[in-house]
Image 1 (cartoon, rainbow, N blue to C red):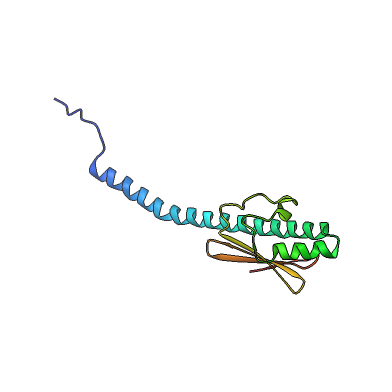
Image 2: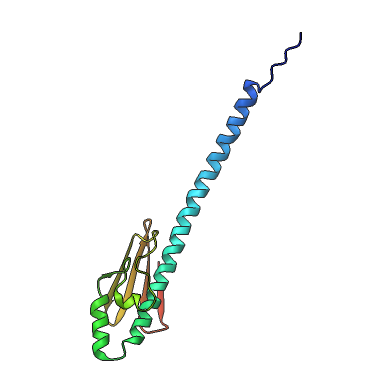
Length: 136
């Protein structure tokens, strides 16, 4: 009689498990870094958009009274839920999920946007329309 049992030997199964373990050890850190980089890029993009919305609102505020109202409204505001002045310029009602915090400050004639994502910070400064500074 012939033994017709089919299947894998224990050695073959151990080799497959070892290969899967090695692949997981190599790929999982790469996937985590890719997600972190995607969140950082989304945060940078959002910060640039906030600066654009501030510049547009600054141009729209064409009198001294409107400029003062804009500076007062935006100073210290949380741009994860943008002010009505920024939503009028195209800002969404809420920021993206990758943005943990977003703060606008106005000091010495200059707006500063501080945006934080997963432990990293990106700062933008908008003094006049067309003049933007990016600081890490």
